[in-house]
Amino acid sequence: MWCIVEKLLSKIKELGWFRKLRIYGGMTDLYSISRRYFVIGFFDGVLTVMGMILGAHLSGEASRELIISAGIATSLALGISSGWGAFEAERVEQKILASEKRKALLKAENEQCLIDDAHEFTMKVGSFVHAVAPIPAGMIPLIPYVFFKESTAFLIAIPLGLIMLFLVGLSMGRVAKENVLKSGVRMALAGLATLVIVTVLSPSHL
Image 1 (tube, rainbow, N blue to C red):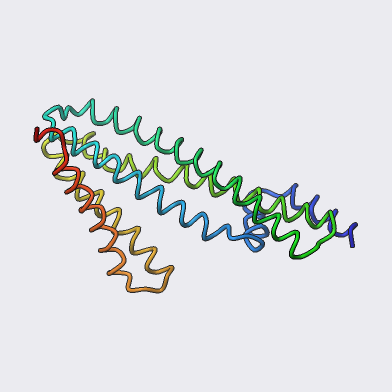
Image 2: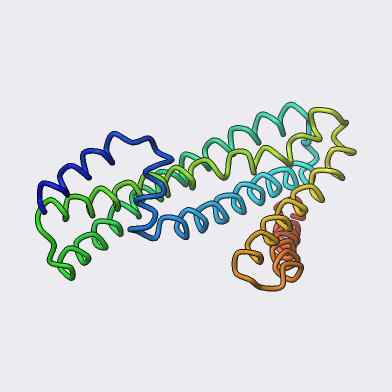
C-alpha cells in the first residue's frame, strides 16, 4: 500500500497545475476557498479604485494622469497585500486542517504526505487568486480615463464599476442557486452604499 501511495504522490508532483487542481481540489475545499477569495478580491479592487476616483473628483484634483497612475498603483498594492495576507492566513488554516485530517484518518506516513501536499497546494492557489483578483478589477474603472476627459470619464467609471459588481453578484447567485438578479443587485447596492459613505465622510466637505 505504501508503495502505491509513494508512486501516486510522485506522479502528482510531476503533473501540471491544472491536473493538480482536479486531484487536490477533490481532497480539499479548494474551489470554494478560491471562489471566496476571488469575490472578496474583486469587490475590494473595484471599490477601492472607485473610492480613489471619487475622492480625487471631490477634492478637485482629478487629473487623468493622476487617476490612472494612482489607480494602477493602488490595484497592484492591493493585489500584493491581499495575496500576502491570504498566504499567511491560509498557511496556518491549511496546516491545521491537514493535521486534523491526518489524526482523524490515521493514515500511513506516505498518505499523510499526500494530504499535506494537497493542503499546501490549496494554500498557494487560494493566495494566488486573492492576489490576482483585485488587479484587473481595480483597473476596469480606469479605462474611461484613457479615452475621455475627466468629467466624462467619471460619469462612465462609476456606473462601470457598479455593473462589474452586479455581474459578480449574478455569478455568485448562480453558484448558490439563489435569485441571480437579487444577488447582483445586492452586490451593486453594497458598492453604491460604500460610495455614498465615502462622499459623506470625504474631507472635501470640511
